[in-house]
Amino acid sequence: MAVRALLLDFNGTLSDDEPLLCTIFQELFAELGKPISEEDYYDRLAGLSDPEVVEKWLGKPDPELVAHKIERYRELSADGSTVSPEARQAVLDAAGRVAVAVVSGSARSEIEPVLEAAGVSSAIAAVVASEDVEHGKPAPDGYRRALELLEISPDEAVAVEDSDVGIAAAKAAGLRCFAVTGTLPPDRLGEADELIEGLDADFVRRVLA
Image 1 (tube, rainbow, N blue to C red):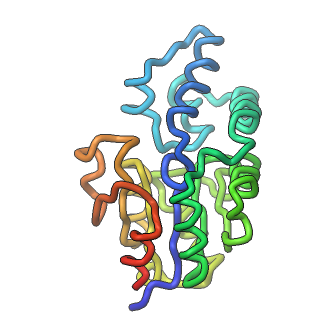
Image 2: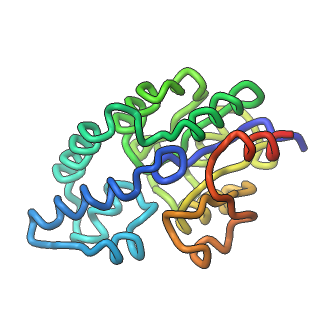
């Protein structure tokens, strides 16, 4: 069946910002006397939603800390520079052929300003953010919601992820999933259908041909 939609993870996939996220969480957790190393962040937390990152590391929910994280992220990503020119062109090219959606564990208030500043917001047909689903990745809720919004079946869409939990979510939703290398080592991405070096126009042409 022909592909009718491209479903993109945001952090680390469309937006090259996992190092920024790691730094923000390191600062916030250190302020609370619960420091986290870069290794622990990537091994244990990368790919989870903001509330789940906080709860998993601190052992309890902390909505106020999540709000602080969102505020810091917005301050540091406001210029849209975390979306590379190659990723931007890929989104614009894909949107000329199929529906493009963002499926993320971040808040809508973090995602949409970056999309706007990067010049791709008008190319995005739907955004599914952390507040739109009950369970974040690896649960398939976000991807299932995107499929509902776009009114398509799983075999009509492909997903692009950068983490093992994201891949698990996409596969649980019945999607073919490509994984961008860089955030995690390739051995952590083995459940993906294919590994790719990045989101670019060549990928779009190949997958949507």
